Image 1 (cartoon, one colour):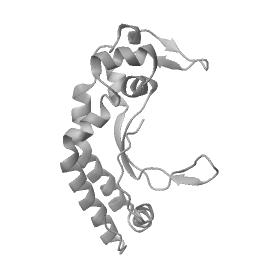
Image 2: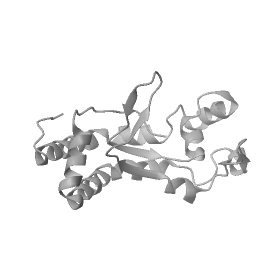
Image 3: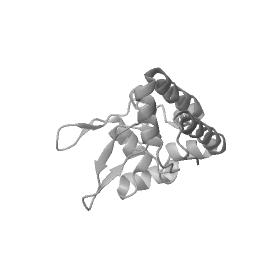
Length: 172
């Protein structure tokens, strides 16, 4: 589950790919820098993730039709799936047959427990979560909003630095 705040920079993915060809160590440093920039968001999000199951039924083990575990709230497991990421080349097929680039920089809170808790919008589960924790996104977006001014400025500076390193004229 990723939250949908976006700043579009044309050529950033290709600039990162070019940087990776020239100096892999420097490319990894960009990822490290991004992770440091968004660390306050991740700290805030982790602070707001419940230690105990948000609802009593979420402490039980639920499995889907495939047999995969959908629930069994364990705070250490749920917290572990909250990460910052950088992506250089990932593309997916979007509806209508065209290809769509995925985020270059982002924060992801993966796993079915995280998705259900943070983004459930319909049904009795959602109603119960909304009564206790508010509307979706209950964790990630709120954590981002609390740190957005600092994060956006720092990410802009990072992107401009990458573009400058690769000789690309693109700026945000």
